[in-house]
Amino acid sequence: MKPMNKTIGYLSLLALIPTLSLNSFAARNLLISDIDDTVKITGIHSGNTVGHALGTTNEFAGMSMLYNGCADSFGMDGKVEYLTAAPGQLDNLGLDFLREAGFPPGRETVGNFVVSGRDAQMETSGEFKARKLIEIYEKEKPELMILVGDNGEQDIDAYGALMKYVSGHNGAIRVYSFIHHVYESEGKGRAIPAGQVPFLTSADLAVQFANRGWLKETALTRVLGEIEYDSGAQQLEKEVVPAFMECALFNAWPELSPEVFGQAPNPSAIAGSYGQVKANATSLCRNK
Image (tube, rainbow, N blue to C red; front, side, top):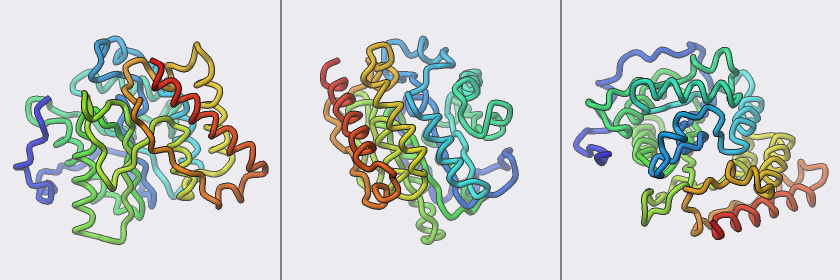
């Protein structure tokens, strides 16, 4: 795919924005997620892209559990939306995946929270996502925006464009970008820049969320337990670290904050579970 067109002024993208069709209630806290290679095992740059893309049950382990936990934590003050640049009928496959995997807000309504419709002849995926993100921001005017994507295509550019746009319009809003480390930057992926946070599994992303108060201790415990089990089971480990993932150099594991320890009824158990996740995932990355 051609690189993102830097001649398009990100800060003038608002002039290109049409009305967005989403459920109309505004939310103080927004979680906006990419689908392919972020929550869905797709392998955009792998040799089996078609085989993965057609699947509707190939979830990166624990991601739906994490998003449901975040939605529960935010309650009526939050909203989870999905942003996909997949062109044509491929965006329907993403919707089918979200329904089958149980992503919030639920099977019957999740379709109302998917933003899609890129014309591949007119826009790159990065241009499309940057435009839609600014549109969402202008429509919602939230206090917090959590962006989750991957380093295989152009999420880094699109999320950076939104962060730059928001900083120029309302410095009070908090915008965080979390990037799934799927590919090595020296190969098929992009280096994750300072200011955007890398993650490898739903477990370390859950730790990041919990550290910031976006995930309750009970939900964090469930995610850690799920990934500890899956990453140690031969039949399930590829849902944590698929064969195409290039992650041997990943070393950005976050530390559990003292506040999270203070909430846990058994701090040693949660620390032990997280430690085992790190050991299992690191082994999978280095021994593929």
